Figure 1 (cartoon, rainbow, N blue to C red):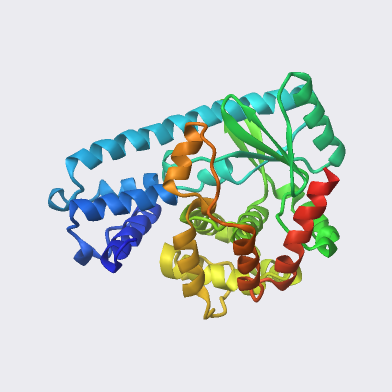
Figure 2: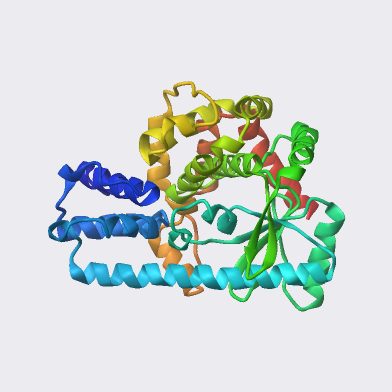
Length: 365
């Protein structure tokens, strides 16, 4: 557990690395070797060690971490960059594979969001996520993968996942993690409305489709809520939400976005998230898409995120996964029920619908 001074130092470094501004709270430095070790460990748990490293590089020599830790940190950051480069190759391979079957999915989250960072190579990459707008294309993609010997795993939430050259890849039928079944038409209309505003990212001249900025923002913000309803989520996803706003705020219709969140029944959650992004992550308040209503629950939600880490996995869990060892999340069924109750006031219909969607979609598969 980090002490108050260590927490202040952690968020000071996070904001500096994320926004590229000078250290704003030098009074929490210097730190002892043990304090640096705990900060480094917590950065790994939240998968933001690359962002923090950018900030560490701006520190004066007398307040730097010990040289032994810096060497370890440099190696880890280099491995993040190498993994991002390998992911680019895998994404390119998958796009070219799908094109053979006249399929053109949209890349969600991850690599597309990394383009909004000041240094995309510093963002730790996770899975690759594809969305097929048409169910027939979704099934065609799945069958095409099975034909070349790739093992498909069907999961709850209308998705399948598979391994491609060591990268976990998810295929989704839905772009948004909305559980409320009565919003299906609303979400379809939203996607059609912004279909002409989608973006293209190029990897070695291979075009990769990305959602329109406003859809990216909705998708990431709802994805955070989804994981808070189950196992928890880490700071990297909050950084994603902040960087999307910062990069695309001028391209978002704030009035339209607010109405959409209200219609989706998640406006209370969004107000809380916005407050967290400003107070803790350092997003300039003027970059929010619309004026925010104060949330009295922001502190408690931030404490939950701080404790839960990256999707509820501990640092040891992550190391075990890399070594292909069995991993069991800390959360149990009872714990998930408690989380659903906790987040009921933020998005009532989502909290109620979430377990039913998981059960139904698992049975459907």
